[in-house]
View 1 (spheres, rainbow, N blue to C red):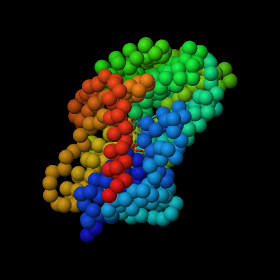
View 2 (cartoon, helix red, strand yellow):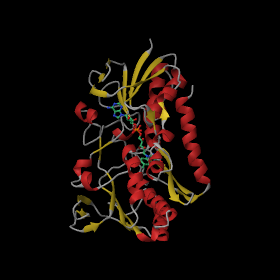
View 3 (cartoon, rainbow, N blue to C red):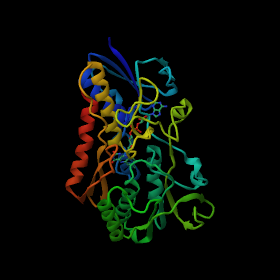
Length: 377
Ligand SMILES: Cc1cc2nc3c(=O)[nH]c(=O)nc-3n(C[C@H](O)[C@H](O)[C@H](O)COP(=O)(O)OP(=O)(O)OC[C@H]3O[C@@H](n4cnc5c(N)ncnc54)[C@H](O)[C@@H]3O)c2cc1C
């Protein structure tokens, strides 16, 4: 009998899972893929938006172009999830699938940092990144502070990339010497699992004159005085504050009661939840990997392997492999590469490949391959 599989969220995790199921067991499944948006966008497109290199429509990969046997995309907003009964309600109807997969990503809690909504800007949402374009264009002198406001956060190298790309952007406008750029982090190094990557990023910060402040937690902003306040009572003045917001699960996941300690707990081998027939992948989980698209994708592959073996009634599914490549923008047409591995049960490793022009093309290829794989039959 055809299995009804409902995937909530068509991001890295949902798209990869749909692709694998469609490729391997199209005759045995009917996949419904739901997202509230009309298009997928890569996280790294946020840099293109904020620095005015692309518009929203340039970076949209429209779901209406998704052509996959046994996969139907529906643009709907999920309004409730009852994991125990696998019953899902959206703005357009109700679903009772055989298998439910929650891949709804992470949301942001702007208000948990007092003063941030009033006095700060952000590039972690697509709308925030697009709005920043004009704010940056109007800024011509003073200090820009990039502050990481909570843990965990998506794509750990992204704030460092923003600082290096900001240097390039200000240089192109001829105002780099009029602007101080600082990055304030709670961590002691930029990418803790990658000592060599961290060293290379810190060396690049020194070369570019980016002020890097470690082990510092920003707890609030005072928009009137334009200062960020830290947990140890320091004040950091800013002209423009770009914050990495505190992350949390989407409201609908919070209301479902599936999350514990902030995120949905999962079995690290096959991403099953404590509810029979219900899985969760990507940023919405507390899986032992960073919140990044490549890990959401890798987790989705583990769920796919598991379901395919179950549907076929044969084979030993390959468990979550924890591997992913993160490309790190260094500015000036240079990209470095972290080859991360968060294989469950082992200490993480993340060898580093020095930034080079070659990886610019490789990163573009990374995006093009996924577009082809996720959207074409
Ligand atoms: C600046 C920046 C740069 C980044 N660069 C990289 C990078 O180079 N490489 C990398 O691997 N990762 C990168 N990331 C991280 C990456 O974007 C995320 O980690 C990744 O998208 C997570 O995948 P996911 O499938 O878990 O969730 P998402 O891709 O966020 O997908 C979740 C989907 O759920 C949908 N959704 C949410 N709530 C509802 C609802 N109620 N109803 C219906 N739909 C809903 C959303 O619309 C969304 O499409 C970057 C992130 C940022 C902010």
